[in-house]
Amino acid sequence: MNLQLFAHPFSSYSQKVLIALYENDTPFQYRMLSPEHPDNLAEFARRWPIARFPLLVDGDRQVEETSLIIEHLQRHHPGPVALLPADPGAALPVRRLDRLFDLYVSTPMQKIVLDHLRPESERDGHGVEQARQRLDTAYAWLDTELGERRWACGASFTLADCAAAPALFYADWVQPIDASLERLRGYRARLLAHPSVARAVDEARPYRELFPPGAPDRD
Image 1 (cartoon, rainbow, N blue to C red):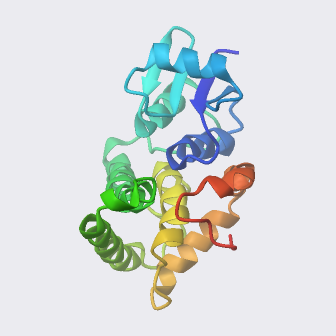
Image 2: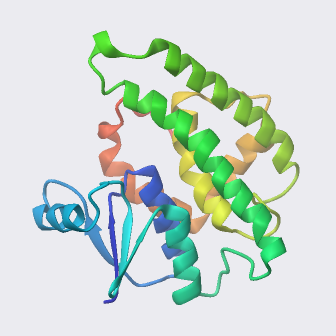
């Protein structure tokens, strides 16, 4: 099998790529990154010293970073679902929201999560409070931005939704989306019910005890 994905099912960015693979039923070899698979860890470290996952290996090519991985999949392993429009103009709004979900939802969410891994004496209370405020600001903006659209950019499930699903899934765990933001909460619920997203979430259930702040008993 040419496609290999070095990833972990509980990783939000791994889920982003897994959702894209599952959406198109793309066959691949799952190279689990965990202590139970030392050969995968060693190969991953050899290939990518930056050590940020997931990492896609396609034959003699290697692709880092989630958005580029999904674009690579669409170009070289297309399926029935086009996650990025072929027209450059139509693709731009999808790329825009993909980046915004990564930068303004995933990044502050990870700030809060990673702070729990620090010794209590070294925690960054000010930084965490800033991250919570940034999430609340992003939530309010997204509630307006999404409007009545079914998916992030309209009627079709795209790269932007692959980014949104794990970002909103975990962000709502650490900074709950206010009940007044009904459109955003509805969008998150639709994402979690979508088959490719639900599969990624279900595969990660056995690892919920690893969530540093403590996983809520929901979703």
